[in-house]
Length: 273
Length: 273
Image (cartoon, rainbow over all chains, first blue to last red; front, side, top):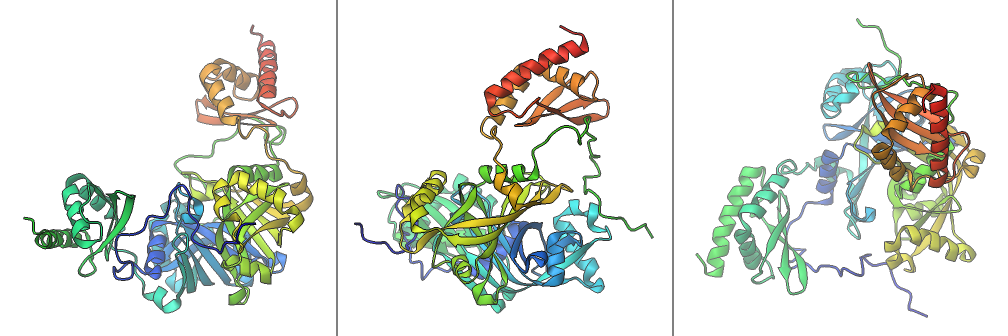
């Protein structure tokens, strides 16, 4: 009989885990609060869980689209819908938002925001509506129907799961102060540009700022306010590298400046010019 | 001040609703129970809503993959996970499953299965595992970890929403006897074949069996056990037509036989040969 195994990090046995070539504890990465906040910026649909009023409080899931106003999720829902009747009877709820992608669903990042839903007051309605309709212009068609109202979810905590084995509870204060990554809209452009025009620089960053040594290829795979990530080719196959910026960046221009400065430092450090 | 509007069928005002060219009450269509059952066959990931044990029962949503065994949703979940702790404390739950697609999320069909989750007994484990792993072969890697167990959701009712304005509660008995559409795997092939090779036949079906009259084009858009659907070109733009088979079909061969017989009848009725 085989030895019982403990729960580890599930992984495809055909593809052994790629050990990182950098010190994961030393290189700053976005916090779970920040990752969850960025996820809400990218994804505009989720599942609302409410206490089913007609089923003695049974946890009931329904599909919703949501907007964001001052960082809080906003719903525009009809009083005729089950979830609205549920919230009117019991406001405690959660909103699950998950990344979409072709990968194993359990490798996708997701966040469950827990809290209470409150109807938006008349005084706040105009500002909230503007935020919501900026994200969901099609909803303008029914936004003024008399049975529809805006609700705000007052979030008290967030469960964030970044994929296998990367998860935590984010407390209210950390959530309330977290901001979405400033590079959300420019990341793809930056990555494409670096991979197309600066493959040589990427190899130097890896050699200078990770444990990879010289590599034949380094492909940028991600960039955020704290640094950037690459998949570098090694004798053991592709391995992840993350390199931190000296300080958090606020936009694509700052990324460019940081990259140029780091390239000079890499060359100096490696004794090349 | 504009007159308050009642909640209608939200629709894109640029694209007026396409009035069907057939009698919606007379042409059989899959029941909501059958549509929900077929949806579970096509989609293998959903959101589980549970009572959060550590948050005084707050409705908590989490992402899960699920299998099907004797028509019941099966979960393979770790005792270390929040949702499992929640189910151990309170088994009442729901599973929301929704279609994916590029359309407006609120136009997507979805089903919320409500009921209670029960741990699969040792006696049933092998059969349940075989069903689950047939659908999720990657899960074999962690299926035998000691902290993982199979759970079955005993469904007591289903809320089905087929899109804007098409929704109902499906009672337990209707759900328990509903079977997935037998054409799920062959529908795409049938549709492609008909559109590529039998465009003339499709026009004749529409002329003979709907209110369209002669049409320059009829494109098959769907087929199920009870009939098939087309989008036909008219002076008012594309309009939907649904044509019923004489009796429910069980496979692609039966569709072919039914189509051939109906073509003969259409020609006869229209006085063409």
